[in-house]
Amino acid sequence: VRPMTAAGNTAYLRIEHLWKAFGEFHALKDISLDINEGEFICFLGPSGCGKTTLLRAVAGLDLQTSGVVRQGGRDISTLPPSKRDYGIVFQSYALFPNLTIERNIAFGLENTKRPRAEIDARVKELLMLVGLPDQAKKYPAQLSGGQQQRIALARAIATSPGLLLLDEPLSALDAKVRVHLRHEIKGLQRKLGVTTIMVTHDQEEALSLADRIVVMNHGVIEQVGSPTEIYRHPATLFVADFIGETNKFEATVAAASVSFGAKAFRCAPHSFANGEAVVAAIRPEEVIPHGPGSRSPGAPDVVKTPENLIDVTVGEMEFLGSFWRTRLRGGELGDEILIADFSVNATRRLGLAEGGALTVELPADRLLIFPQGERHGGG
Ligand code: ATP
View (spheres, rainbow, N blue to C red):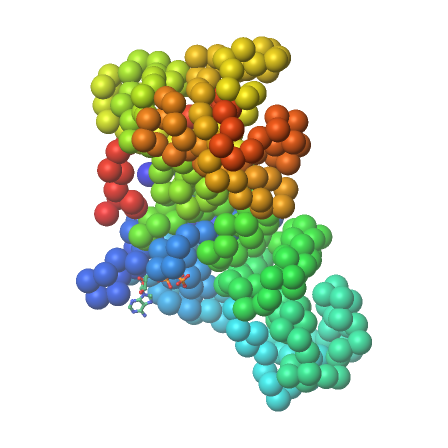
């Protein structure tokens, strides 16, 4: 297993060779991961990939079949949840309906047998922290979903745990509240510096929140990296496909080129064998529009790889607010269709319109190459 961080033994949370079986089914297959103190980590992946199972193993809510979990150097693998040091927020608000907001927040603190005055002060402080100072005497049902999740968050951090676990905490909320609360969670996490793991299937949420994203699929980790690493340098076709939009073409590689449609495109160095069948991929926003149907674009200096220019016909254009999602076809694309996202500016400047001719560039360093028939998750 390759190391997931350069931090070595200094990792705050260390997951070592974790397996989880439900009968014959392996929900987690040899997961190893180091998480540094203060990091905001997102477990991201499609439904059923094992992200909740992994979080629950860290929490001790379900025990792993084998493997070790260490927190702050301590082996916590078999400790019951009550003996572990974390706060948790679930998707459903999970507040006690018959307790007031202040009693809900105080719940964990009361178990620590602190003096009443200290608990009251801490509850006040937490209510301020989550921006709900006036709600102390209300009951959960009197609050909105977003407000209830803030209270759940306040309750989770009340005892200043070493680890904050968030299991899809925003997914039950409507879009606007979700985005708003996302920023608040991030702000709070930064302020407290608490090591945080959040489970989500929402790529945008993971990209905007995480210091590092752990992309999971079929019980294995596909890639661990910062949002920009994951997005710009996806390690596998699964990651490229799952996060963001990607054009994919069945292709053949040579030493310095990759061929699909009716053209050989120059590409970055790779380790594939000459003539190997691969999948070539490029993000729609990496396709550069250069001019209307001409190989002599006005400003040659902006062409990064002149040999990767192709003449195409502009097909359907879909307006998506800040950009146009455009289908390109014809010419050296052969039977392939290339989806390109063009900024509103470029579209206007170049006078792009359906049916028009256009020269685009597929920059060599933005062409991604993956093995064909890549098995997702390594079986
Ligand atoms: P979701 O986003 O849908 O919650 P997930 O990535 O969190 O997905 P898990 O809940 O971790 O997925 O489940 C991983 C796999 O393990 C799934 O295929 C699920 O069906 C299976 N699984 C989870 N819990 C159990 C259980 N108690 N018994 C049997 N199979 C289970």
